[in-house]
Image 1 (cartoon, rainbow, N blue to C red):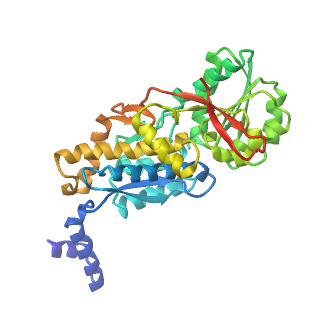
Image 2: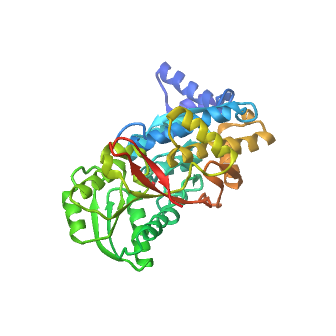
Image 3: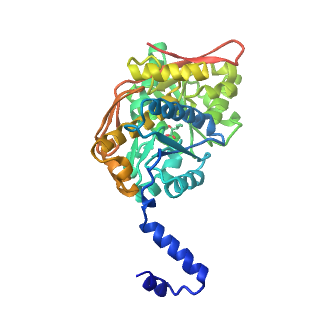
Length: 400
Ligand code: 1QQ
């Protein structure tokens, strides 16, 4: 058969023959089974670029999960091992990271990428390869619908974002006029602004202007001036952290005094160094509270506090949760057939099927999935940023 194969491809040079033989043999051999040691889980998030302001918190969350679950015996005695691939901030980086994890990393599943914009590019690759993807922070409309192998632990903008508008109205019931800003080159920002704009209408508020920018912009004078001239009493920003933070700073420097809502892209203390004291007062809806009752959140919170000397942020909690879902689904599979005895392609398919059926008690609360891979989650919150007068340190205070 090998001879036939070689003849068919008309391989002439001996080294080509050797290469073909090795490829052929390794495709049939026991190396199909990747899990003789620790079980590799791929982590594809932004460790560099602007988006690392968000991705860093995800790295923190998954590392805490690795230590936590391995200390509890991993998958029925077999440890997990995280395999990191930096996606940086764009689609090309995410695609490259996914490809490396699928082929070289031989991972059972992937946690990533950081942005919805990246997910729409990279997730179809994992889906075609039948490798599960758990989105730790992709909140745009349409993520679970990318394919059968894509699910998310990050509740969608439609569920999370309206909470911040309701909170703003509670703080200031006089709000009537709303200005909206969004990054037009980012899938999440476009999806989130649609929800914000719909919420403004549903609340019978007046949308006085819609201003667009790019996530790569630094200078927002044009949009900030147009926004202020429309005389809003609430401004809502859908962008990422560096651009969003800069826009807040410039709005305040130009004299805007009303409430500001930031979307999920501003949901990190890493914006403090961008807008400093002027970050004060930003309202941001949350899919996690450090105060969520429940043993696993208390353990996660203590581990995070011990290492970082502050409360864990949403992106860390969601990233921890994604690893937890893999670990618990792997335990279920392993209880029936040892994971180490399964061929990698079969394990990946079983993992996807099993994780979608499970119920999980996580730091973000009790969660499960719809058959399509959408998260089912109960508890949502709104936080407000409180900056110290020095403009260096601040915190997210949760509203009642
Ligand atoms: C998305 C997001 C980002 C702001 C999370 C980092 O929600 O891209 O969907």
